[in-house]
Image (tube, rainbow, N blue to C red):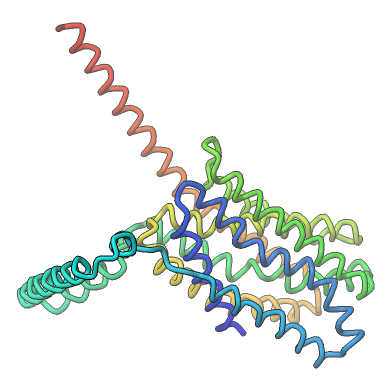
Length: 349
C-alpha cells in the first residue's frame, strides 16, 4: 500500500506543479484536497461497510475505490515542450528531422566535451560534480533545512491521528461509534486548511513561509496541551485544530519546496523529501507506542514529546523566511540607491 500510494502522490503533485505557473499554489492546494475529502467521507462510510459487509467486504470496497485512481492517472499528461508544440502546429516532418539531427550533433559535442573534462578531473571531484549536476539543489542550505523540517514532520506528525481515537475512548469515555465524528471533524477541517492555504499562498500580502512555520508551531502547541482534554468537546476542538494546521502544512510543503529549488528541480527534490518523510514516519509511530507502553498506557508523555517536536519543526524553518526578508531588504535598498543616483544625475544634467 505504501509503495502504491507513494507512486500515485508524487506524479500527481509534480504534474500539477508543472502545468501551472501564476496560480500554482492555489492549484496545488486544490490538488491535495482529495485526502481531506477521503478522510471526511470514509470515516463515516467504513463503520457502515463493516456492519453491512464485514472486514473482507470492506477491504474489497476500499480496494475498488482506490482502483479508480487508475482512471484519473491515465488522464495525466506531461507539459508539452516548445519543440513538440511547434511540430504539432507546423506538421513538417523535415523540420522535425532536421531538429533531431542538430540535437544529436549537439548531444555528441556535449558528450565529447564532458568526456574531455572528466578525463582532466580526479575521481573525487568527478563524483562531486556529477552529483551536483544531477541534484543541483543539494547546494542550497534552504533545501537541507526543508528536509530537516520534513523529517520532523514525518516523525511526529502522524502520532495524534494514530492515537486520537484511542485517547478519546480512554480519557473521555467516548463510545466507539461516536469516534467517527472526531475523525470527520479532523478530516473536514484538514480539507478547509488545504483549500485556505492554497488561496492565501497566491495573495501578494501573504508570506507563505511564515504561514507554513506558524502551522507547525500551532499544531505542536495544541498537541502538547491536548493532555488536558477530558471531554468529547475538548477532543473535537483539538482534532479540528490539528486537522486544520495539518492541512496547511501538507498544502504548502510542495509550494514552499518549489519556491526553494525551482520548478525545474521540483520533481527530484520533492521525491527525495517524500523518501525522508516516509523513513521518519516509519520510526515515529512505533516510538510513540513504546512510550505509551512504558507509561502504563498513558498517552500524555508521548503527546507532550511529539507536540514539542512539531513546534521545534517550525522554529527550525525560521531562518528561511528571515533570510528571504533580509534579501528583500537588500534589494529594496539597492533599488532606492539606484533611483537616488539617477535622480541626482538628472538634476546635475
